[in-house]
Image 1 (tube, rainbow, N blue to C red):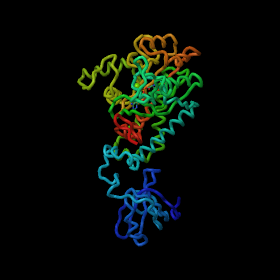
Image 2 (spheres, rainbow, N blue to C red):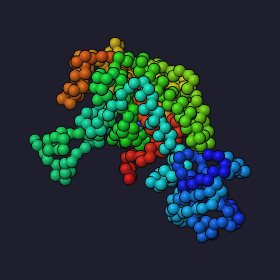
Image 3 (tube, rainbow, N blue to C red):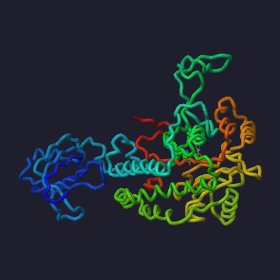
Image 4 (cartoon, protein in one colour):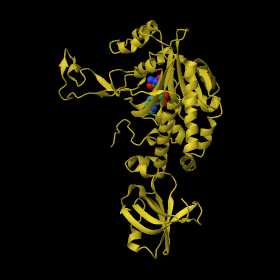
Length: 452
Ligand code: 4AD
Ligand code: MG
């Protein structure tokens, strides 16, 4: 719009300043981090009206767009009419407080979405969701909707939220056990921890699929990187081996980071300047270079050498243990100085479905590790061999009863295939530079916290 245009602007007041003659109101409608400045001449507007223009109040302003002489904006609105749509009591409004720490904002989580910070995070979150669909759509992948209620514990970790309509005060019992035949689905069901197994049904039918939906884990992890309800993107591809899988994962995250730099520049600049002055630089740093590919066994050697050289970790490291995020971050930030793809893990720390290597003790899993976060992607080539898969299920003492449908993919026209899961909020931690995963999802669910 050109200066001189008559405009109508609606939004919420961020700040009001000025003097007796003129007031400057910063108005924001949430579409961008940038405010529009409203210039209100005290001669035109009644004092009582201007008193109601307080931080958080909503306004409709008519006026003329004029070139701005003040710094910071190209244009502003010279107001001819101001309507206060909703007043906002400055004594009570929770965002009026001086305390703008992330901890304080979590305590007023229903209102925190109105802050500049959460506006920026929400817009970036949206842009990333859109980019994810665009990336896969452009490649011809099919968006597959996998169930949220399921009887399968894909990861075999057992940390599932049960779904039931049974009266917990009067649970039906049969032969000393809960009688789930009386439950809504006639069997024991839970919220999904991963759409992968159903994703494999899709990939072995239409070739290349991805899921993008909420997943639920009842692990009692009160960390800055864990949520009980988080979103995951799980591509699954027929005819992909682990090399193809790694290539896709790397291309995918680089695409998303590039998309954020290209489309969220103002919001990233704001977050960079306010919280993390290395943010934009860190985003750029993962783009130009190939990720480092390292086997788990090599990584253990690197970490053991670091310990011998005096590096202190809270948790011990030896072949066969799962890495903690401190180990992952050492590899990424200190040793290699770039994102790392770890492959070939001990089979005992990974799920039953991963393709077994010929050494008999490792599987073809892959974890993508990122600076400041650690694991952002977990995936693998899948065991495509019926006999080997069945043997692994038996070794782990898993019940086949609920898995026959999955085993059928190997029984009928089995193919090499691979996939991975990207934790959406872990990606957002990286892209926004936020330090706590509770601050990149609008309504976080964590142990003892399920407000709204
Ligand atoms: O490594 P995970 O457990 O892998 C799977 O679920 C596989 N079925 C994926 C696949 O191969 N299709 O989880 C995948 C990713 C992790 O790398 C992490 O980014 C994220 O999901 N994640 C969590 N994010 C937030 N809170 C939690 N509690 C998370 N648990 C996993
Ligand atoms: Mg994992």
